[in-house]
Image (cartoon, rainbow, N blue to C red):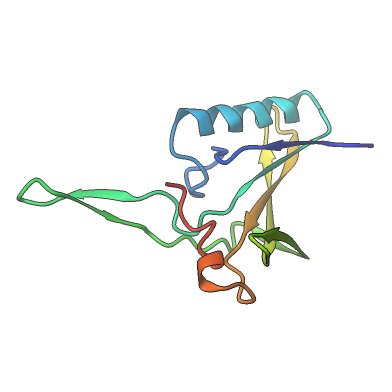
Length: 134
């Protein structure tokens, strides 16, 4: 059976995994939960943000500073043995694939694939492609 891939830069499905920042990410997550409940042959695809979105801090002087808490995908996500690569500006960028199941409101499940460029074989600037949501 063929599946449809639903790609979104943000997919909100768990507060423990920083793959969304706001309403559009929550909407994408709800689309996938509804697709699971309907039994549709669909797979979600998003990016694995190892630093997610920033935490805002306001100093006594009123100036904002940001911090980016590190997210460790294991044990919440499972890294697949397959690796893919893409050609980007005449160089190869390797992409690891992590997975988790999105559970619909009725308990039915669909797979979510999370793409990760923080791979030792990549150059430092390519490893950081998927570090931050914003």
